[in-house]
Length: 345
Image (cartoon, rainbow, N blue to C red):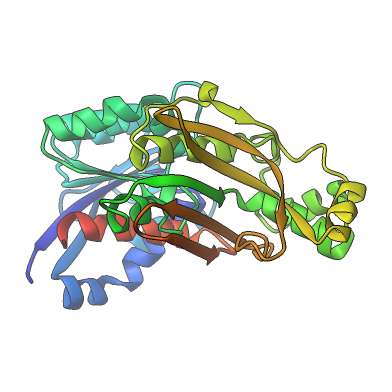
């Protein structure tokens, strides 16, 4: 199958965006041979400004700039210091906008504005950014449909785990009775280290931060809101239920101590932070809370670097998927997966 050249713009060159560029540089031959795809990066934006070139930018040059502590605006001859990401979405002649800017749950910016502009201009959008989806899922979906383009976001829910794809594509025709998942790596890392290694909460959190699993400010993770964000996206995209964060009952792990973990272990159980959607009254009840699981439960067996999802259905049985994700590479790979699926289905 020959698809031809696809022009890309990338918003955000942090951990995920940079790894996407690494994948783009090393997978070009595979993409051409397997899918007939030639991916051309024509624009990229970060906090320094943008770089824009109709005939293409070198992904490796962008990566080098970032490693040197510079922004993309320093790209020789093609950098434009101070230009906002939204201007890249407005000016670039591209087929797909890749959105990997930091999650902003206040107003979704700059990602939300860039995504809306791209969709209005007839660009497909691939994102790993939860904020715009949590705040404006219905609006973005309608924009995509109205303009005949795709909105893809499998990397926004549990990184490289195909959580959304399983629910939307592979369980087509099924009724999902309930789902449950470990959707946040940081909390799973902390609870596992506390339970299996005897670490205190503070020690486990410090290790998670040192290993890059937790942010300097970990509240979004440890208070349960990151998992709640992902559950809201699953509610919209898989369960067909419009939801907001206010619809989710949320309890984090900050109150879990060694004593409770030991008590659970003595009872043959494990404590995990579980995001869950239970079918009731024609809809779903959405919860995120520390949960005592039997050791035989598939999510109880997940290690510190794993996330997982379990779908309980009426006709497709019970489907479980897990992933080992030790760095952001699988999330970046999920963006490539979405991009391929837009053109190769």
